[in-house]
Each structure stands twice: as C-alpha cells, then as structure tokens.
Length: 317
Image 1 (cartoon, rainbow, N blue to C red):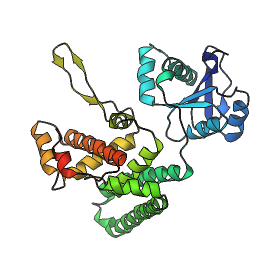
Image 2: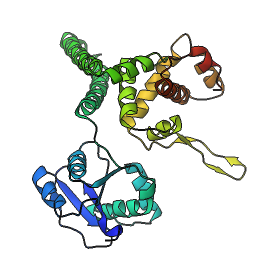
Image 3: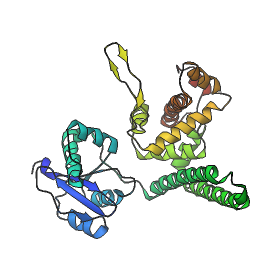
Image 4: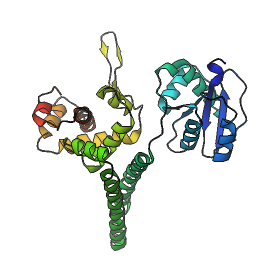
C-alpha cells in the first residue's frame, strides 16, 4: 500500500468530521462522537495516518481514539495550514477542501512533523486547569472594566469580584496539589520558579510543557510557542520583524506576562529600560525580555542548575 493512500485529512467541527483520503474519493461525514469514530477507525489499516487541524477542544477526541487504535496522528497548526492553502491558490473553502489541504500538507511535509502523543491524565488535567485559570482571569478583568465604575452596583460587584478571586485561588490550590504529588514536576517547577519573572502559574505551565514535549533546544521551545521573530528583508531593505505566532496563543501570553513581571523587578528593570531606549514599544520590549527569560528557564530545567542572575545579565540583550 502506498503512503499516500494511508493519509486521511480530517476537518473537525463540534458535531461533525469531514474526511478526505489523499488521492481517493472522500468518505461520508462522521459524527464527532466515540461510536462513529471507532467504527471508522476499525476499517483503517494499522499505521494509517490521521491528520487534523488543532481546534482547541473539538479535535481531542479523534486524536485520542486514533492514537489508541494504532494510527499515526498529526495535529497541525491552523496558521501554517492557512498560508499553505494560500500558496496552493486554493480558491474555495469548504470542509471537504480543508480536509484535502490537510492530507496534502502531511504528504509533502510529513518527514518534518512530530507525531502527536497524548498527555498523561495528570498532565492533561494540569494543562486544562491552567487554561481555565487564564480564562477566569480574563473574564474577571473584563467584568472589572465593565462594571467596576457603576456606583449603583458597587456592593453587588464587590461580592462577585471576591467570588471570582476565590475561584481563581481554588484553581491555584488544585494546581499546587497536582504538582506536589509528582516529584519530577515539583522539582522542575521549583527550579523554573527561581527564574526572575516566573511565578507559580508560569513555572507550572513550563514544567508540564517541558516534561511533555522533547524540545531539542531552546530555539525549538521558542518556535513552538510562536515567539520566534520572522524577518522580512529584501536586498538592502530590512523589513519589520513579526512573531510567527505559530504556537498556542496562551503560551505567548504567558511568556509576555513573564517579561512584564521581570520588567517591574529591581533586577531586570534596567534591561527592560535599555530595550525601550532602543525605540521598542512596551509590548515589544516585554516580549523580548520574556523570550530571553524563557531560554534561561529552559537552560535551568535542562542543566538542573539554579538560575544565575549575574550570568543572565552578562548576556547580550
């Protein structure tokens, strides 16, 4: 059997899966549920490729079941697929066309892709709690901006705000329990937490990420997070650098918060101000500082040596 005939691109929606076999006729749509997915997977040869776009939550059931059935699973970055489709001059956008683009992308780039591996139940729960906490923080700040200035609802809003704060703290306590129960994660988090700018949540997030994904270098970690700057040069013209944004958005936001926290610290405020003095905007300077600290945290985790502030300050900005 040829490799191409084993590639199945799947466009995932909340209730439906649209499947395109590379070089073959399309399969009928499936319901995004355990019964129909398992019935379809039983018809595939072991080792077949099942590829899908990352959708946040809706793709997770298919990825887990396909992996358990012995398939090679790829979960692809939506941004890369978007630009890939543009490069192919795809003029229509339907679920079936999108599934075909996914299958073709894997056929052309599969040798460079990493197969998807499921997280352990403990790691998956920690990751879910961190995401839920981030969402709760965003909603709390939105409510503060929308309702905080209304004097007629001041007392009621105060109660709501306290309840939201208590909810966030309960998530953090649960995170502490889970991390402390795993010696490897607990030790990794303690090391990372020693890096300036990394608080309890940021250190927990990075500890779980590093234990789950085998990053070969800090460059790979930065690129996975979508924090790698992409040049836009031509001849003598030096274009504006922009982040690739190819990774999960919540990671970039967390590393930005690390940089912002470090910028407010006594130790690294001068480094932040030096970046600002170069004409960088506040967001750009915080992201650069956060990326630099992310590399330092990776080194700390890799070498199992505590963060050395003086060595960090001696590195070029």
